[in-house]
Length: 270
Image 1 (cartoon, rainbow, N blue to C red):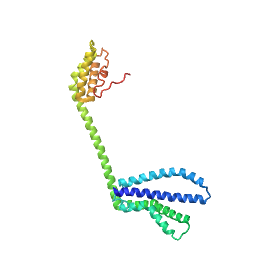
Image 2 (cartoon, helix red, strand yellow):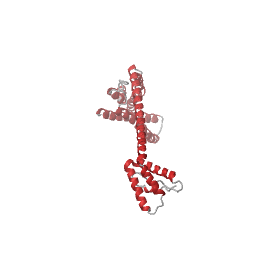
Image 3 (cartoon, rainbow, N blue to C red):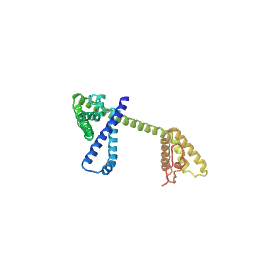
Image 4 (spheres, helix red, strand yellow):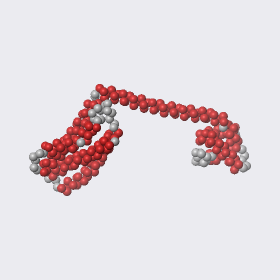
């Protein structure tokens, strides 16, 4: 963990140095082309926001690669090592050192700084854009890397398929349990459904008493099997009402009287 944190900080520093060198080269090129300072500052102000965004995205990708160790060591025997990571991160500083050594004997300050900046730019471009992708490509075509990649992908596919099978099996078990519960409830709830049907279709003289009995039956259904049991009881009741009491109009008072029992909520009218 400490090595990864040190790599993060080193990469921030090297990227900042790289951007500074690129900025110096651009400013120097604009000044040599005769561009005034106020134009340079105007362009740099807008460009700084774009550079900050791009660098943020780049560092985010690099940090994820460093922190999560996404490279498999068997498939990337070189680029997954800490030594290569240090080399990759320190590329701008190595370029700075190369530029510094190349400018020994130069007395002009601007040329001296330009040599350091160009050394940083050239080395960083060479390592990050050319060398690193090339080494990664070579690692991928090695026999051991290809074999391990095929095995890893096959294992990942097998695990994904196994998870899918487990989900299907779990769903089937849940559906089978619901069906079993429904069959058991139909036998157990039949007397209560017939009683509710009688209450709904009878000439009601004491609405409060009927409501209390209906609520008590609903509470028992909730305690027996929750919301699913209550729905089954209500459906059975309405079905009995249609079969036995066809000549009477049945109002679904159960939907409103059971409102607030457990998770039961009355459906809106209409």
